[in-house]
Amino acid sequence: MDLVITQELARAESQQDAASLERAYQLIKSANLGKSEFDPTESFSPDLFVLCAEQALKMGRPGMSQDCIQMYFKVKGPVTQFLGRAHLCRAQLCAPKSTEDMGDFENCVTQYMKTVNFARGEPRYHFLVYNASVLYWQMVRPFLKPGYRRHLIPSLSQIVNVLNQIEEEDKDWRAELMLELLECYLQAGRKEEAAEFCATAAPFIRAHAPRRYQQVFARMVRHGLTGELQLKEETRTSAGLAVTFHINSLQARLDKNDLPEDIPGILREAYEDLGRGSHQRVPSAAEDQ
Image (cartoon, rainbow, N blue to C red):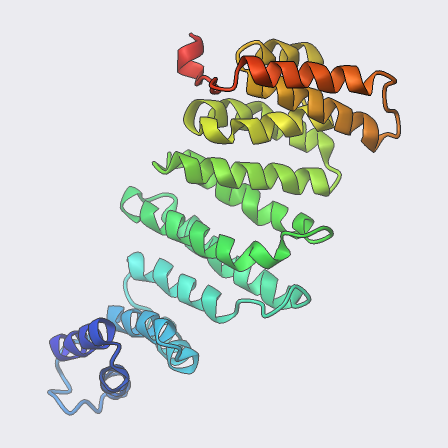
Protein backbone atom coordinates (compact mmCIF):
# COMPACT_ATOMS: atom_id res chain seq x y z
CA MET A 1 0.00 0.00 0.00
CA ASP A 2 2.84 2.38 0.79
CA LEU A 3 4.08 1.95 -2.77
CA VAL A 4 0.68 2.80 -4.27
CA ILE A 5 0.38 5.96 -2.16
CA THR A 6 3.95 6.97 -2.96
CA GLN A 7 3.27 6.55 -6.67
CA GLU A 8 0.13 8.68 -6.46
CA LEU A 9 2.04 11.42 -4.62
CA ALA A 10 4.86 11.26 -7.15
CA ARG A 11 2.35 11.64 -9.97
CA ALA A 12 0.68 14.53 -8.18
CA GLU A 13 4.03 16.29 -7.88
CA SER A 14 5.39 15.63 -11.36
CA GLN A 15 2.14 16.34 -13.20
CA GLN A 16 0.46 18.70 -10.72
CA ASP A 17 -2.38 16.19 -10.80
CA ALA A 18 -5.05 17.06 -8.24
CA ALA A 19 -6.82 13.72 -8.78
CA SER A 20 -3.68 11.77 -7.85
CA LEU A 21 -3.27 13.87 -4.72
CA GLU A 22 -6.88 13.22 -3.77
CA ARG A 23 -6.48 9.46 -4.31
CA ALA A 24 -3.36 9.40 -2.14
CA TYR A 25 -5.16 11.36 0.56
CA GLN A 26 -8.17 9.02 0.57
CA LEU A 27 -5.91 5.96 0.74
CA ILE A 28 -4.04 7.50 3.67
CA LYS A 29 -7.26 8.27 5.53
CA SER A 30 -8.57 4.75 4.95
CA ALA A 31 -5.33 3.18 6.11
CA ASN A 32 -5.32 5.38 9.20
CA LEU A 33 -8.81 4.13 10.07
CA GLY A 34 -7.88 0.52 9.37
CA LYS A 35 -10.29 0.37 6.45
CA SER A 36 -7.82 0.07 3.62
CA GLU A 37 -9.02 -1.40 0.34
CA PHE A 38 -5.75 -3.33 0.48
CA ASP A 39 -4.71 -5.77 3.20
CA PRO A 40 -5.66 -3.98 6.47
CA THR A 41 -2.79 -5.73 8.24
CA GLU A 42 -0.24 -4.34 5.80
CA SER A 43 2.26 -1.91 7.32
CA PHE A 44 1.69 1.79 6.79
CA SER A 45 4.46 4.36 7.15
CA PRO A 46 3.59 7.54 9.10
CA ASP A 47 6.02 9.37 6.79
CA LEU A 48 3.27 9.33 4.17
CA PHE A 49 1.16 11.68 6.28
CA VAL A 50 3.90 14.30 6.02
CA LEU A 51 4.65 13.66 2.35
CA CYS A 52 0.98 14.12 1.52
CA ALA A 53 0.77 17.24 3.72
CA GLU A 54 3.78 18.78 1.95
CA GLN A 55 2.34 18.09 -1.49
CA ALA A 56 -1.08 19.40 -0.47
CA LEU A 57 0.56 22.65 0.66
CA LYS A 58 2.33 23.02 -2.68
CA MET A 59 -0.93 22.46 -4.55
CA GLY A 60 -3.02 24.88 -2.53
CA ARG A 61 -4.91 22.39 -0.35
CA PRO A 62 -4.27 23.68 3.19
CA GLY A 63 -7.24 21.80 4.66
CA MET A 64 -5.92 18.48 3.38
CA SER A 65 -2.44 19.35 4.61
CA GLN A 66 -3.75 20.21 8.07
CA ASP A 67 -5.67 16.93 8.28
CA CYS A 68 -2.59 14.90 7.31
CA ILE A 69 -0.45 16.66 9.91
CA GLN A 70 -3.05 16.03 12.61
CA MET A 71 -3.13 12.34 11.72
CA TYR A 72 0.68 12.21 11.81
CA PHE A 73 0.93 13.60 15.33
CA LYS A 74 -1.87 11.35 16.59
CA VAL A 75 -0.11 8.13 15.55
CA LYS A 76 3.14 9.17 17.30
CA GLY A 77 5.49 7.59 14.79
CA PRO A 78 9.25 7.14 15.19
CA VAL A 79 11.41 10.23 15.62
CA THR A 80 12.85 10.90 12.16
CA GLN A 81 13.37 13.87 9.87
CA PHE A 82 9.63 13.77 9.20
CA LEU A 83 8.97 15.15 12.67
CA GLY A 84 10.87 18.29 11.73
CA ARG A 85 9.16 18.43 8.35
CA ALA A 86 5.76 18.10 10.04
CA HIS A 87 6.54 21.16 12.18
CA LEU A 88 7.53 23.04 9.02
CA CYS A 89 4.15 22.20 7.52
CA ARG A 90 2.41 23.39 10.67
CA ALA A 91 4.37 26.63 10.57
CA GLN A 92 3.32 27.35 7.00
CA LEU A 93 -0.29 26.51 7.78
CA CYS A 94 -0.50 29.03 10.64
CA ALA A 95 1.50 31.82 8.95
CA PRO A 96 0.09 35.30 9.79
CA LYS A 97 -1.96 36.94 7.06
CA SER A 98 -0.95 40.44 8.16
CA THR A 99 1.47 42.15 10.53
CA GLU A 100 -1.42 42.67 12.94
CA ASP A 101 -1.85 38.91 13.47
CA MET A 102 0.70 38.70 16.28
CA GLY A 103 -0.92 35.59 17.75
CA ASP A 104 -0.48 33.70 14.48
CA PHE A 105 3.03 35.14 14.20
CA GLU A 106 4.02 33.70 17.58
CA ASN A 107 2.43 30.33 16.81
CA CYS A 108 4.20 30.19 13.46
CA VAL A 109 7.57 31.10 14.97
CA THR A 110 7.09 28.42 17.63
CA GLN A 111 6.72 25.75 14.94
CA TYR A 112 9.82 26.93 13.08
CA MET A 113 11.83 26.92 16.29
CA LYS A 114 10.64 23.39 17.08
CA THR A 115 12.14 22.29 13.78
CA VAL A 116 15.38 24.17 14.44
CA ASN A 117 15.78 22.80 17.96
CA PHE A 118 14.89 19.28 16.85
CA ALA A 119 17.40 19.26 13.99
CA ARG A 120 20.33 21.16 15.51
CA GLY A 121 21.72 18.21 17.46
CA GLU A 122 21.76 15.68 14.62
CA PRO A 123 24.09 16.37 11.67
CA ARG A 124 21.98 14.36 9.22
CA TYR A 125 19.05 16.67 10.00
CA HIS A 126 20.97 19.94 9.69
CA PHE A 127 19.39 20.54 6.29
CA LEU A 128 16.13 21.12 8.16
CA VAL A 129 17.70 24.05 10.04
CA TYR A 130 18.55 25.67 6.73
CA ASN A 131 15.10 24.93 5.28
CA ALA A 132 13.44 26.35 8.39
CA SER A 133 15.54 29.52 8.19
CA VAL A 134 14.52 30.11 4.56
CA LEU A 135 10.81 29.52 5.18
CA TYR A 136 10.97 31.59 8.37
CA TRP A 137 12.52 34.48 6.49
CA GLN A 138 9.84 34.37 3.81
CA MET A 139 7.22 34.55 6.56
CA VAL A 140 8.74 37.50 8.44
CA ARG A 141 9.47 39.74 5.44
CA PRO A 142 6.26 41.79 5.95
CA PHE A 143 7.55 42.58 9.46
CA LEU A 144 10.69 44.29 8.12
CA LYS A 145 9.35 47.77 8.73
CA PRO A 146 9.69 50.35 11.49
CA GLY A 147 8.04 49.31 14.72
CA TYR A 148 7.87 45.62 13.85
CA ARG A 149 11.46 44.44 13.50
CA ARG A 150 11.80 44.20 17.28
CA HIS A 151 9.43 41.23 17.24
CA LEU A 152 11.96 39.26 15.19
CA ILE A 153 14.89 39.55 17.59
CA PRO A 154 14.24 36.49 19.84
CA SER A 155 13.68 34.05 16.98
CA LEU A 156 16.08 35.51 14.40
CA SER A 157 18.94 35.66 16.91
CA GLN A 158 18.39 32.00 17.76
CA ILE A 159 18.29 30.98 14.10
CA VAL A 160 21.51 32.90 13.39
CA ASN A 161 23.18 31.25 16.40
CA VAL A 162 22.14 27.75 15.35
CA LEU A 163 23.25 28.28 11.74
CA ASN A 164 26.63 29.31 13.14
CA GLN A 165 26.76 26.34 15.52
CA ILE A 166 26.10 23.80 12.77
CA GLU A 167 28.52 25.68 10.49
CA GLU A 168 25.99 26.02 7.68
CA GLU A 169 27.91 26.01 4.39
CA ASP A 170 25.92 28.84 2.79
CA LYS A 171 27.94 31.60 4.40
CA ASP A 172 26.37 34.34 2.31
CA TRP A 173 22.95 33.35 3.68
CA ARG A 174 24.30 33.49 7.22
CA ALA A 175 25.79 36.91 6.50
CA GLU A 176 22.48 38.19 5.13
CA LEU A 177 20.63 37.11 8.25
CA MET A 178 23.34 38.62 10.44
CA LEU A 179 22.89 41.98 8.72
CA GLU A 180 19.14 41.80 9.18
CA LEU A 181 19.50 40.91 12.86
CA LEU A 182 21.88 43.83 13.33
CA GLU A 183 19.28 46.13 11.78
CA CYS A 184 16.64 44.71 14.11
CA TYR A 185 18.78 45.55 17.14
CA LEU A 186 19.40 49.07 15.85
CA GLN A 187 15.76 49.81 15.02
CA ALA A 188 14.76 48.51 18.45
CA GLY A 189 17.19 50.95 20.07
CA ARG A 190 19.28 48.13 21.55
CA LYS A 191 22.65 49.66 20.69
CA GLU A 192 24.72 47.75 23.26
CA GLU A 193 23.47 44.41 21.96
CA ALA A 194 24.04 45.62 18.40
CA ALA A 195 27.65 46.49 19.21
CA GLU A 196 28.24 43.17 20.96
CA PHE A 197 26.75 41.23 18.06
CA CYS A 198 28.66 43.30 15.51
CA ALA A 199 31.96 42.38 17.17
CA THR A 200 31.56 38.82 15.86
CA ALA A 201 29.32 39.39 12.85
CA ALA A 202 31.52 41.99 11.14
CA PRO A 203 34.67 39.82 10.97
CA PHE A 204 32.60 36.89 9.69
CA ILE A 205 30.99 39.00 6.97
CA ARG A 206 34.30 40.51 5.96
CA ALA A 207 35.92 37.07 5.67
CA HIS A 208 33.10 35.11 4.06
CA ALA A 209 30.77 37.61 2.35
CA PRO A 210 32.99 40.60 1.49
CA ARG A 211 30.47 42.07 -0.94
CA ARG A 212 28.19 42.67 2.05
CA TYR A 213 30.86 44.15 4.30
CA GLN A 214 30.30 47.73 3.21
CA GLN A 215 26.74 47.49 4.56
CA VAL A 216 27.86 46.44 8.02
CA PHE A 217 30.69 48.98 7.96
CA ALA A 218 28.18 51.74 7.23
CA ARG A 219 26.13 50.75 10.27
CA MET A 220 29.22 50.62 12.47
CA VAL A 221 30.11 54.16 11.47
CA ARG A 222 26.65 55.70 11.63
CA HIS A 223 25.72 54.15 14.97
CA GLY A 224 29.15 54.22 16.60
CA LEU A 225 29.30 50.47 17.14
CA THR A 226 33.10 50.38 16.98
CA GLY A 227 35.85 52.80 17.95
CA GLU A 228 36.49 55.57 15.42
CA LEU A 229 40.22 54.87 15.26
CA GLN A 230 39.58 51.26 14.22
CA LEU A 231 37.07 52.38 11.61
CA LYS A 232 39.49 54.94 10.17
CA GLU A 233 42.20 52.30 10.04
CA GLU A 234 39.94 50.11 7.91
CA THR A 235 39.40 52.92 5.40
CA ARG A 236 43.06 52.63 4.46
CA THR A 237 42.34 49.26 2.83
CA SER A 238 39.54 50.44 0.57
CA ALA A 239 38.48 53.66 -1.10
CA GLY A 240 34.92 52.38 -0.97
CA LEU A 241 35.11 52.09 2.81
CA ALA A 242 36.65 55.56 2.99
CA VAL A 243 33.69 57.03 1.10
CA THR A 244 31.28 55.05 3.25
CA PHE A 245 33.01 56.40 6.35
CA HIS A 246 32.67 60.04 5.25
CA ILE A 247 29.02 59.73 4.22
CA ASN A 248 27.90 57.84 7.31
CA SER A 249 29.87 60.09 9.64
CA LEU A 250 27.90 62.99 8.18
CA GLN A 251 24.67 61.03 8.54
CA ALA A 252 25.47 60.34 12.19
CA ARG A 253 25.96 64.06 12.79
CA LEU A 254 22.74 64.81 10.91
CA ASP A 255 20.88 62.33 13.13
CA LYS A 256 21.97 64.46 16.10
CA ASN A 257 21.34 67.81 14.36
CA ASP A 258 25.05 68.50 14.71
CA LEU A 259 26.36 69.04 11.19
CA PRO A 260 29.96 70.25 10.81
CA GLU A 261 30.64 73.56 9.12
CA ASP A 262 32.89 72.18 6.38
CA ILE A 263 30.40 69.85 4.68
CA PRO A 264 31.65 70.75 1.16
CA GLY A 265 35.19 69.89 2.20
CA ILE A 266 34.15 66.51 3.62
CA LEU A 267 32.18 65.67 0.48
CA ARG A 268 35.12 66.74 -1.68
CA GLU A 269 37.39 64.41 0.29
CA ALA A 270 34.91 61.58 -0.18
CA TYR A 271 34.81 62.27 -3.91
CA GLU A 272 38.60 62.17 -4.09
CA ASP A 273 38.65 58.86 -2.22
CA LEU A 274 36.13 57.47 -4.67
CA GLY A 275 38.24 58.59 -7.60
CA ARG A 276 41.48 57.11 -6.30
CA GLY A 277 40.06 53.64 -5.81
CA SER A 278 37.18 53.04 -8.17
CA HIS A 279 38.52 49.57 -8.92
CA GLN A 280 39.37 48.55 -5.38
CA ARG A 281 37.42 45.94 -3.46
CA VAL A 282 37.15 45.09 0.21
CA PRO A 283 39.88 42.55 1.03
CA SER A 284 38.97 39.45 2.96
CA ALA A 285 40.39 38.78 6.38
CA ALA A 286 42.72 36.16 4.87
CA GLU A 287 44.19 38.74 2.51
CA ASP A 288 44.95 41.07 5.42
CA GLN A 289 47.15 38.48 7.08
